[in-house]
Length: 255
Image 1: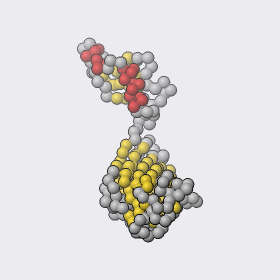
Image 2 (image 1 turned 120 degrees about the vertical axis):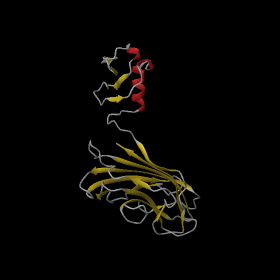
Image 3 (image 1 turned 90 degrees about the horizontal axis):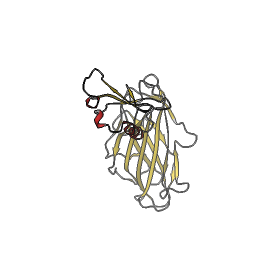
Image 4 (image 1 turned 30 degrees about the horizontal axis):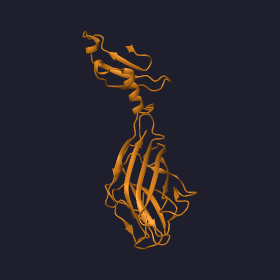
């Protein structure tokens, strides 16, 4: 084992009789000074690593802290424009023409413990109004690829929109977080988020998910089955100019 300062560590097969500069590296390891988790990587030949310590620092920056040995990944991404909803007062699906967003069985399980494992949802869209109608945004987890007003639900209050808006952008940020992993259909999933539209909503231009004094957890989530995530909306006043659509949606897996 060759130690360079106390940062990267290079390991070679010393039974290999070739000169060190020609031997393949068995391991390249970043050792964190604070005793944090080690990052072990496949490495190139030593002669390709001109400055191992500098390479180690570069990898550490790229992977952030890497204390848990995990990365954020995009599970779903859609940049297509969904079906525009107008002249409606009943909750309807904003993702009618978009690919379904699947949360696979077992996502909230990990050998190191699933508590705190998170899904992050980011959505952008546009809305239009005449007068000052209300809009309600809903997130549902269903066990079917077909939308319905069922399943696990998180939603805003009825948020008052601005008067006579034309395709004003709105934004949603939301996180699902596993509180406890239990027997099938007995896990607890928490959810918190926000909808905001600086131009499209009346003051204070934003609302929370869930609304005030509303439960933010469901206690019957089943980690052993597939779920599909849907976003829907409800308008308080039916008019062709009271409309809303979804333009971008991304779902990230964390931890």
